[in-house]
Length: 490
Image (cartoon, rainbow, N blue to C red; front, side):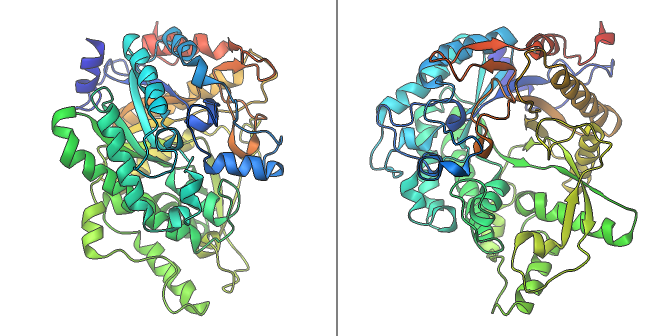
């Protein structure tokens, strides 16, 4: 019964509690992971290498601790234990991703790996048996290496391959999965993977490769959305949306230059993907600036690809609500000495980012605790995109994992949730769910296992990958039950 209610309530209207210290009864809480970060079994039961397998195996020095996700949390074999932890937490839903390489080892639709299909069916069934709603992400950064060798997301044909993969997932799992996300954090996929040599596939072609990637991802997302909408929604009665990442940007000073460049940067960093989906086409400031820079650099046309009118119409409106990942805020100031000859995404904006030294630090140097920035961001999104329904799909804080008594993480969640409540009640922002990152410590991309985001500690030195609850588990369990982030509600 709870699951049936979830499908109806979370996606329809808002019934706010009169007690503004509490989230409404129909507000939903969950936690998240992703396939490469937890599953392990990188070459088992027919799975093929992803771009992260390839990067960590061929360039181990690219990862801070030189390690990889070959075993990670071993969730391929320990998924039932993971579900027991979810049950202990009392979540409404669990967000996880499907590994494309586990379903389609060649990357193409011609060969289905039924052992991989069985794994995800088993996981989904275990969740449903425990009254936990699955929220499934189709693409969380682990592209099949076979497709990367064709150019990956810079190759427009990837739209077709992703569409085939998405359709297959809807066929295989859509009778049990009612919440789908298409692509996780496309800006980071493109900027960090094809622009500035950070994330897999770790190419360094900023200002060109990242824009080509983004163009393909937006069309691929829209194809998946329309496939679901046209072929599956009527019978499966689910929802589908994209997950965008936004770290709030605040002018460093009150100067006109800093205020203007901050607004420009917001449109580049978030509007790059939000604008085509919510408003149609890329942000005008992005179109104009990249065209201007490209002309001065001697390019015959803008480095930012151009959508046709048909593509603009096809992409616009392709999300049932806004999946939002956010972790921190930054100060933004105008670049004093701008070099027009330098080709690059950041140079197209002409800005620099920093932190206020007064902001509370975490183990991740670039992520400070700035809850009031979250409220500002939510209000900006509401005003810019005509009050979209927002579902927090990731929010969390990293530490170094030296203690199970993670009081700073508890403080982070408490202050963030208070900011979200203020946004809902004082700014009339529509927020219908919140997802903590992450269920457990895992492989944190180029940081390896140095950063710990988990509510549960994982002993990566143990063959059993033993999970142990941190202090934050008790806090989150109580939050999920009472819908209240502070003690005074009781």
